[in-house]
Image (tube, rainbow, N blue to C red):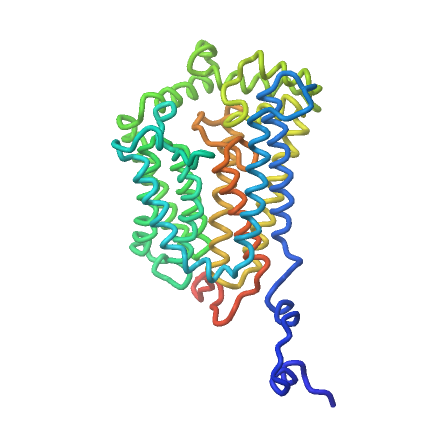
Length: 409
């Protein structure tokens, strides 16, 4: 009778790394869907940026912004691979240092004495640090650091199932929201609320407690009107005018929104040819066509079919992430995936919603697709962390993921 592999290892004093890898890794896992969907969205984004930035398609090379976005994609893929290698338990140990470090960068952005050569305001907003070769936006990285911090805090706790236990997660959430709002970037700041709620619900928080908080926030919302910036008030007024069917501001406060909607409609069912799409975007003078309004460019080029393909890729990404979370038996890994997926889901809904006129314009970009080095890097690191959870099996000791005896009471 032959000895078992584990006994043979003990007797011979040898170690088989291949056997260890097979037991610790899951090469075939749902997170591959996130990687493929993210790659498809990124490539579509590069083409859409080129369409938005270059009228002549026959020069044989990408426009400057599209070429830089391709470089950002390469850097993002490398970063995705790097964060996928170590077990997420080791990444969890870096949660609070990462959170505090990025928080310090957000504070640095708001220091008035910092030279404009380092922090240059753009359109009245202080969001970027000039690194010489590229600009860095700490707010994008804060999304990841924040999810790591909340997931690490909640992983073995039950206090959040009581109303008072929600105070600490709220206190962790408040600083990044406040600092990003002051930049000002209210659109990005509000994304943190959706991620927090998703992680709390995944961790077993009471839905009635969530409902109370949402109700109180809705009742208090009108009181925030006096503290909104003038441009933020204008966007709300513009949205109300659109709902009322008032087109008097089509050349003023609603110009960007109506132009984006016109381009979305111009694509029809299957879109227009490349040259025609470039002319439409150029001569309609769509503001931020390579960035906030990139979905309108995609719809003009590929029509409703192209828009549905983009939405389908996002659904593939989100579905793969949620399956990865459901299969993870370790609390930290599950919360990490849920929190990151919530950021992508809310950001996608807000961006597409504002492009087609269903939501006010907030400056929120479309993940993987809109132009931006910090955004591309952050979304691919985010994807790498989800792949990390899918790739690595939980290492003992670990607890079951938020199963409570009174869940059905």
